[in-house]
Structures are given as C-alpha cells and as structure tokens.
Image 1 (spheres, rainbow, N blue to C red):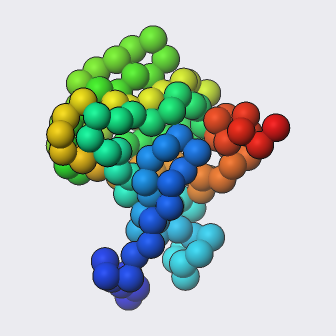
Image 2 (image 1 turned 180 degrees about the horizontal axis):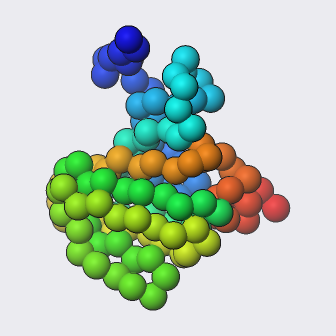
Length: 124
C-alpha cells in the first residue's frame, strides 16, 4: 500500500499555467502504472494556455465548472464530467467563475516537456 498524504503535497505551475499536484507518478513513486494521476487547478477567472500533447489526455472535473475547447469544439463542463482529449488537438480550459476549477488529468506516457507543444515552444 502507498499513501501520499495531502499535508505533504507540493504543487507547481505547468507551462499551460495551471497549478499541478502529482497524486501519483511512475517516474517519482514506487508504483507499477504507465500513467501519472495529476490534480490541476485553474484559478477563478483564468484559463490554461492553448497547447496540445502528442498523446491522448483525460480530464475528470472534480470541483467547479468551466468551458473546455478542444480543436474547434467548445463545451461547458461541471463536476463529474469526463473529457477525452485526442492527441495533437489544441486545447485549453477556462474558469469564468469566482471559485477554483479542479480536475484530474491523466496522460500516458507520463507528461514531460517533450510531449507538450507549448513547453517545446517556450524552450526554443
């Protein structure tokens, strides 16, 4: 059994502007899984930067509401909604409310700068 206690969590800001807590990451934790589980937070009246990944990504909305844009499609999302984002599709999520938007993000293989278009752009 592995428990990562909330009191010990550390967060960081990703290249898309969201605040991330890696709940589990096979690169850093003694787990036999091929994907990380990250919790992302978008502050009130903010959005992530438009970007795309080279692999499929899944969002599960934990708290709040937002508007997600994937390619040319946009949709309102609320707590409990699941979004599958195809590889190589531009994406961003907006929080137009006064409360934080939180979602679980899962991508396999684990996220790194090399698979995130925005991260590559910023490192040129």
